[in-house]
Each structure stands twice: as C-alpha cells, then as structure tokens.
Image: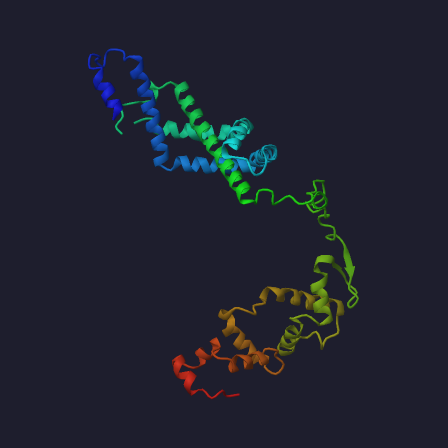
Length: 120
Length: 210
C-alpha cells in the first residue's frame, strides 16, 4: 500500500522521465517481495528448505555443527547456555561450512524458479 | 499485490543472481537456526549428551573403518566359499545351504514328514528302482529345496487347496490333529464355510461334535 503512495507522490515524473533513486529501489524491493511471496505461495520455499536440510545432513554438515555446539556448551556451561549464545557462536560457522556442491545445487533450483516466475 | 510489468530482459542477470544468493542465504540461516533451537531444547531437556557414556565403552564400540570389514569389525562373506561334507549322504554342500540340506537329508525338519507323505501318495519311483542311486538322491533333495517356495502354512486363501491335499494324504497327514483343534475352539474360519447358518444360531445349537 505504501508503495502506491510513493508512486502517486511523484506525479511530476511522467513514465518517460527517469525515476528518482528512491523509487527505483522500491521497485526492486517490490519485485523481491513479490517473488518471495510467490516462492512461499507455491510451496517452493518449503521444498527448497527440505532439500537443503536433507543435503546438509547427508554431507555431514549437521554433525560437524553439532560437534561445534558441544564445544560451545562445554565452554559456557551446560546449565547456563542460552539460545543467543548458540546462535551467535554457531551461525557464522554454519554458513561457512556449507559445501559448495550443496550451494550450487540449490542455486540452480532457485535460478530455475526465478527464470520461470520472475516474468509477469 | 499488483506489480508493474517486469520482464526478465529488463532485469539484470546480476540482480537475479543477487536475489538467488539472498534466497539461499535465508534458507541456510533457517537451517542454522533450526539446528540451534533443536540443540538448545535438547540441552534444557537433558538429552543432548545422551549418546556419550564412559570413555572405555566408547572405545569398545567405536565404528570400524577398515577395508574388508563392516562397521562392527566382522569379516564380510567369510563363510561364503567354504564347503562342508554332509555326514549322511557324503556330498559336498555349500555352507549357506548346509543347514537346510541337513534337515531334509536326516529327515528331521518341519517339511520332511510332509515331503515323505507326498512321495508315498504320488508313488515316487525312487524306492522301487535302484538304477542310479546318486541321480535319484539329487532329484530328492532338489524337490525338497523347492518345497520351501511352496510352503504356505498361514494363508487362509490357500486353505481350499490345503483341503484338497489333506484328503489325498489323509492317513499320515500331520495336519489332522490341527483340524480337531479348530473344531473344538469357538469359531474357526472353516466352520463358516461348512455351515451356511448365521453365526449366532450356531452358537446356540452346536453340541461340540467330536
């Protein structure tokens, strides 16, 4: 709804004129939001999530990260470890440890989806 | 949410690529968070370290990772190629087939009496002709081996077939005692086939014929 106002605000600009920076960015984010929405709506995001989980378990990422969690827990103490502790310690390592093959495969699928559905 | 016309040609490939990377990064973060939540719950509920015991038993049962062995350290296929000599018929049998062969050869298995009866009924010529003892012996054990495939003790569907065979080998059939068990118990499935009346009626009128 907000984006509509943005467009009506700049009534001085006709479609032929180049849009100001702010409106270009909103167009971008609008498109991204629309694609994300479509991703969720069509169930593709859930499928991708499941695919990623399965691949990460297969390649041993989950076990590696779990071992790292064990270290963190022993460090912080079993009784006092919080979710924030785990998240801040584990997430960066988790991102780094994802193998390239898994990344490639998922990117392939995402690109295929975008190629199909980024046009309207 | 209505959108203005956006076609792929107007979008940079780099933009699409950037978008794909962002989506991937979101998914990876979801996976990481999921793991963190699971671990945290396991810690708070007390089952996180459940798979670790004392050092000694962990060393004992550690996974074996050597070529030619399975994860328990056992040798695969160790007895596959060995051959044993049967004490009864003096034939050399493969190790995996040795136990069933011995069962049939000594006449002590589940099926041995059934096979013997069947042979009596069909009038097998092995007992009358003494031409080629070794040949006959071979066909004997092969028939018995095939019997495993035809074994259908527990299929109600095959009961009608079993009934026919029963009449054939009636005098020596081991199944005879089983049918008595069925009659004396409440409602064997065979009863319904013989008696077309309703089950409740049967209950009142039957006088347990023996």
